Structures are given as structure tokens and as C-alpha cells.
Image (cartoon, rainbow, N blue to C red; front, side, top):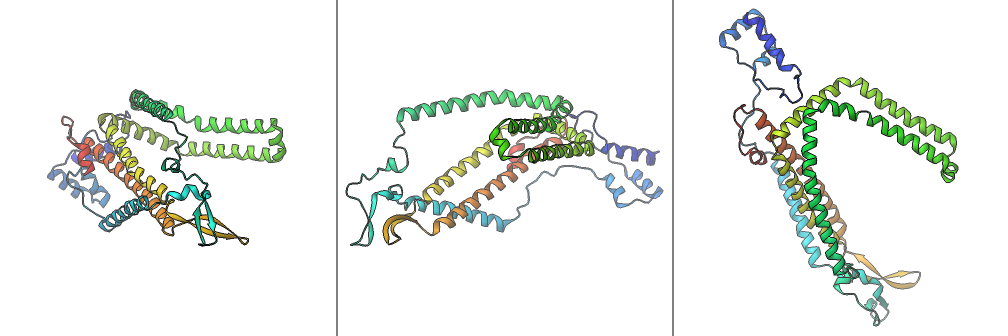
Amino acid sequence: MASIEEPNKSSNLYETPSSPTQPLLSKPYPSPSIEDYQSHQQSSPQSDSDRTQFLQIGYNFGPRAFKDLPFLILFLLFAICTFGFGIFSIAHHNSNYSSVSSFSYDPISSSCVIKSNSNHGSSLNFYGFSNFKSSSSSSFVRALIWVLVITFILSLPIIWGVLLLLKHYTKQLVYASLPFFIVIPFGVNVYWFVACTVKSSCSEALPLAYRILLLLFVFLVIGVVVWIFVLNWHRIELTINIIGVASNALSRNLGLFGVVPCLKIGLLAYYVPIVVFLVFAKYNGKIVPRESNGDYDCAWKQDSWVGAYYALAILTMLWSATVMVELKAYVISGTIAQWYFSKDDTTPKRKNRSSLR
């Protein structure tokens, strides 16, 4: 009887749960005894796929192996060079960048000198804040703070409500959102066709035949989308189950609502000095005479290293964004995995901290 019952047990592992909120592996797979395993092996020869049915799925608690050391060194080198040259750009910027018109060519010295009757702008005018009143600045900052506070307060119940809806009404929400992929493009397509027909300038620029062809092309694309939905309807059912299990896991690990936004805020704080460095980098240069049709005037000449620094800083920002994406994936997957494979009566401690390590 053991050889007949055990395949039935193993097939339950791949069955779809009755509820989206029910974990896919809510019941651990029972370990067979040695006698049952030997009798089953003697009764029927097993292939490699059959032997994998006796393997248990678990979570390995332990430090993650350190890999990709050369790329880590290269990334740190990029970041250090970005900040180093950025500080250099601030220290050696030329404040005459915004006052090129105040300089004129001096044929005696063959250089650009400041005009005697020009009013050389102050550092406040250099940064473009001369017309920015202190009262308007304080009111803008106050309004911005209130907007951020109100947005944060209102976002908490909205996020919690969406999470509850996804947890208990996953199937209804997914099926209700599918028509919008068809209704919205259909309505926009009809609207632009009617609006272009009514407006004389649009109808003259785009003849009726081209408008009809474009209208039919968009309808064809909508039909392809419908066909993709029908062809992959089983994948939609799988998506519903995945969303249900994910929302249930997120409701049991609410600490992710604090960790993931903090990671994004950290990335934003990391970007702020780099953006400031990019702004100051264009101020590195000098005012030089320029010949145009036999006449000389003064123009701004940027230092040769500024273009390379822009490429370095942008590459560092893109690489940092990629690292942050991978970091969030490790934190979310590690936290959910520790909760998922833990015992029913125990809750793992410091899940987020261990995932960050």
C-alpha cells in the first residue's frame, strides 16, 4: 500500500491551492521511511525525476557567499572617482560662467577682459537666485512640507486598503482590470479620430485615407492584445495565484514597507551630491577670445575633462540604480523566504537585517 499512496502524496505538491492566500507549500512534504523507500525502489525502477520527489524544499540559514569581488572593486573605484572629481569641480569652478557678456576682447593683451562699465554679478546672481525672494522661498518650502506630510499620512491607509483588496479579492480585481487594457485604447483611438476629423488643421495635415489606415492599425493592435489574453488565459490564472500568495506574504511581513522606501531614500540621498557635482562641472572652464569673420569676441571654453566626467558620473548613477534593484530583490526574497519556510508557531526574528547582510 505504501507504494500506491506515496505517488498520490507527491502529486499534491504541484496542485494549485484552493485559496490565493493559502501558501503553496503550507504543508511540508512527509519524509518517507527507509523501508518504504527501499520497497518502492525495488518494485519499480526510478528515474532521476522520480528521485527528486523525495527531496524536501527548505531554506538554508547562513551567510551568503561573497562573489564578484573584481566588480565590487571596480564599482567602488567608479564611485570614488565620481565624488573625487566632483569635489574638484566645486573647488575649481569659474564664477565668470554666467557673465560672459560682461567681457570684451582687448587687442592689446589679446585676451578677454571685463568691461569697465559692466556690473559684475554677485555669487547670488551666479547661481540664478537674484529674483528669488526670501518670503516666497519660505512659503514654497512650507507648502512643500505640508504636501509631503499629507501625502505620507494618506498613503498609509491607501496602501493598507490595496493590500487587503489584493489579499481577499485577487481574482475579482484582476478580472476587473483586464477590460481596461482594451477599453482605454479603444476609446483613445476613437477620440483622436473624431477630434482630428473635426479640427480643420489636423484634417488638412492628415488626409482621411491616412486617418482610416491609422484607425484600423490601432484596432488591429487591440485585437492582437485580445488574442494574447485568450491564448494565455491559463497564465492569467497563474498570475492570480501568484498575486494572492504575494499579498498574503507581504501582509505577514509589514517591515518591508519601511525597509524598501528607506533604500529608495538612501539612493536619492546618494544621487543628490552627484547631481550637484554635474551642475558645477559645467562651470569649469575659462573665457577665451574667439574669431568670427575677422572679428573677435569672447566665448566660454569648457575644460576637456568635463565631458569624460559627465560620462563617468552618469555610468556610476546607472550602476548604482542597478545595484539598488538587486539589493531590493535580495531583501524582499530573503525576508519572504525566511517567513515562508519557518514553522507555523514561530516567527523569524531580524528577517530584514539578515537579508540585508
